[in-house]
Length: 272
Length: 250
Image (cartoon, rainbow over all chains, first blue to last red; front, side):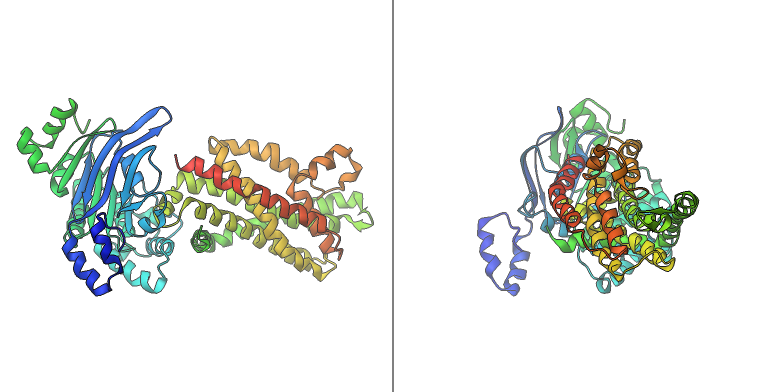
């Protein structure tokens, strides 16, 4: 419990567990992720340009923007995959350089690309992934069954990955991201390329996770997705954050739906 | 760097291997046995003896070495590249507490393990054929791991620098195949111009062949070859980590 942003809360770290639990309730909501002056350059191309944001515990925060807006780069910096070129990013109040293993142990990542282990079965994918978190099979095995139940893949446990449909693979990626009981779940385009039915399945699962208090950060270029599940969205264009607000407040301020807001702010269509 | 997390990466590769080992191990048997049969028996019918040793018996320990080399080189070139680029297994692993150095360490240790495993299978085969004179051949097992580590380092370095999977053709044609042919497996290098053995001295396979042959015939004068491996493994040590970090993490 040493990821608190505010000095006054640090006092509590040396307290007993019991007190800590009580204080945890009091100190919510707190900042889980904060970025200041965040820049990411790939050679001479600036993918993320002086971005600032704070993400609070328990909220669902969305980065909304078209492909190439810099959303995935921001996500990759949050889950310690790559360092920023300039600026500072803190997750759980920890430095993404020095404490990456500790940060990643409390994060679940559902990537945009399917990176499941094609040589392993559905169940084995979860068990092998759990091992990276040093979770023994004794603990990961019942957890894996529970997660397969959650994403409705229990009857597919022993089949090979190649036999799964696109929607099933996405659901398995979601289950895999939850194997370590993460406090923060990062979802990069969680429903991209899915049919409406499979998309709703994922949204239903995300609603359930939100109700359990897990913080969600997602990227999307579907405004319906952002409106449906995000508490707040950051509208991104060409590496910059144009505005951060709740979908409701944005649509009230600018009129129409998020698509109109996007068009008004950037002069471009979102899902182009 | 946590060795435990590096072991988790090793363990992932081992788990996948145990699912596929039947086909890959059988193929791995066939290749060296073909060399042994075609060259040992075929060419052996004309050459008879080298330095007083029947030809097939002369090349048999070298086949242990080449088999160990190809195991680690394939695993950590094509295998590592596929895991990194096509299957995106590395992206998945790096989303967990495992960091890039632990990931690469796991890959290297797995490559070395495969060298050892495949070397052992050939040791068993040539011992059954009666081509091994001494129990000292058992001492070769840790050497296979050590030299396997060098092969794995070289292969991972190649992954870090190739622009695409097709470029491995250059790596194999210009480096691995000449190393295989001029390592002393099929003929002693001292019959060739001095420059050949001078170049061979800088390749790991040459030293592994020396050691394998010496141990198979009960000779122990290979300390220089072992020292060579220890020095090279240390010299190469930082490169795979540095180069792969640059390749994967932009």
